[in-house]
Length: 371
Image (tube, rainbow, N blue to C red; front, side):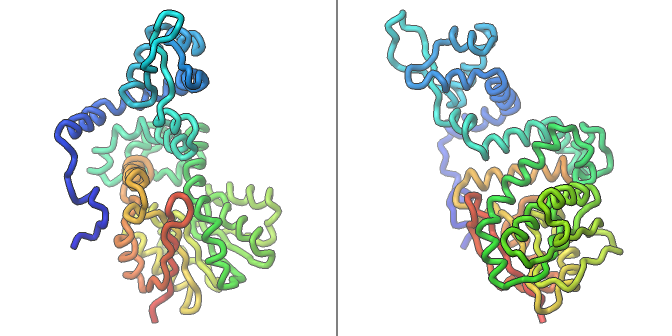
């Protein structure tokens, strides 16, 4: 029996004519992406949206966007092909000119936060570097990062020095996905009444601050790279929790790095997908030595095979390519069984698994050191 319950991955049921259309979308995908960027930046898509059910003529759309008739025409015609806009079938009293109205897909590009976050992340962080995907796969290194002037580094080391727009889009992308699962994860984690939590890969301290607001007595230590720790300390101070949240700047992959012990909970949110499976096992072995037999290790991750919708799975599969060419060259968004295997090889049992947390179907794994 297949491990995939969804026929989408096991049956090739698409008609040949539709498959050929899908292939053309792929062939022109870079141009289509930039067309959407232009439609958004120039305000053409918004002009169509603002026209409501009555629609807008090509001439009026061009005028409102401040572009030539030619420019509006080529962009709105490809928008038609991508189902972003539609043409009103009826003619209008003033001469029957073509009038455009917003389509459902166009609405998501204009109004859906997840789509906007993904689009900006791909445009600002990944687009140019993706040209080096083949080289990155061959080298096992994120060679796309060279477009920002970084060679031989991971994006985590370079994060604080990225161009402002790229850095902001990276953080918005990272927080959008991780934060969504926090609200449902908090009561599960705090059902153990933890007094001390180690947050590995704490980034800008969002989880740590959420914990302090949730429980007035809990104390945390964030373990992360020096650049991220600096950003975290600023956020901690602004939130007024400097007395309850400590930090440790280090690289968890360094052989000399030891994860602090004595915590009731070790927490990792959207952290392990930043590492290869062998590195995951190494990190989890360090966590096992720090945790001891009584502590729980909680891991919050989105797994592409645990999503309710193909669109969500596709987004995660596509995000894996970011890790390949921009982030580190060796990690990905994992299937549940892949990551579970790496965790278990480190001497842990997964004693509980909560799937489909939040609107983006996160999974929260509770792991305990094997006796």
